[in-house]
Length: 257
Image (cartoon, rainbow, N blue to C red):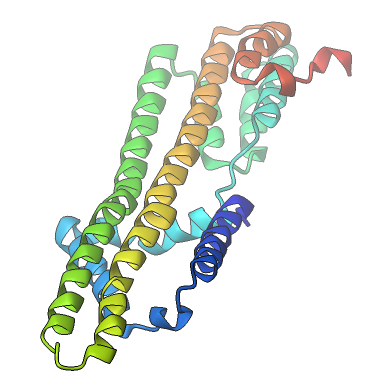
């Protein structure tokens, strides 16, 4: 579970609810099916117009990542793996790299190590892995863009909903007692549009970008380790090289164990 998403989402709802209570706003005004229809169905329609279906099919999996997180190897684990592989390669040769590659669960790391074991040169390994990382970044960028666009459309549709509500309210000025309630209801769509846009959609897009940045850095670390293996560096040199990817506060030297 990605706890920060849950905290942010629930916190946003609570802050609006408490704010309405402090202002004396009637919470029953939020029971407005028309406003929900305009914001959620309208935003969905806009997104269908903005993106091809092949991108929109990723939406459920992106929501899952936002709320459950995405698992990939920790940097310290990668460091330990490559140090151990470098040590084994010095003692047992290239076959040790292939053996360790087959024991790795992560497909990206396994494929990269296999290329080293198969004897490909550093330039080829860099070209293939770098291309794969860039393609992954592009896929992730398009996913985050869906939520960024939702965040742009929802507040604008909120204004549209308010205008529609005001038209309905002003079209029946004969009932003065009901006019105030009608005007209040007209702005529910604006509230929903701003809330979903700036508490949900835009932050979700940013979270996806942050997760992408972490995964890209992890894969760059794997690439650097693979290139160092291909060059035949020692385990000490490997550790020194890959420590650069780990913050000072999180570094655990393997030499002290």
